[in-house]
Length: 247
Image (cartoon, rainbow, N blue to C red; front, side, top):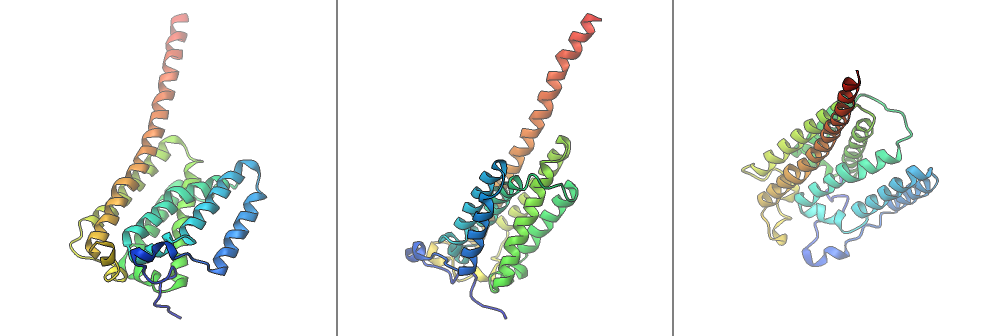
């Protein structure tokens, strides 16, 4: 049954923001179970799993959950944290698991999931139905986790291509939101004004956050791997010359 109230509650006013904690018993039980399982993992997986659990608690228990009901820009930050912090931690915790699927398939799947949930009808549904909200959150998290898990097990050239492709699609989505001439997301048409922004201003800020900080992090990772390739080539070069001189 559709619930017109977002999972994180109605949009808070700035004065009451810090009082809006989420004490959903099922959520608390899930976080407690995740922490319990994290503590039982091997040492190399335990720390990232515990860190992931902490990020999960901050995103969904703290008042940051509620502000996503008011501001689309806050929801975008929420999704960036899932994709760029929580998902890599979860992938690191699951490092012992075998690779499932190619890096190319995970790159495409992550992009499709992200674009689907940022289509206005799908986003509207997620903010009016708790089941759809959690489907959005988990699909974004798991597709990103699959991407980072496959990335860590792929050859360097493939990593660079995947990171550049992800940077391009996220930057394009952000640019489309930043340059849109109208507010696209109905749940925020009446919730941003108390925060000093029009719905369009809020949407444009969200687009800029996805476009510049989000895209830049993928670019930085791609350049890091490219630097590794160049460093390996430079290390091989002098050894080849030295061998030639001896011959």
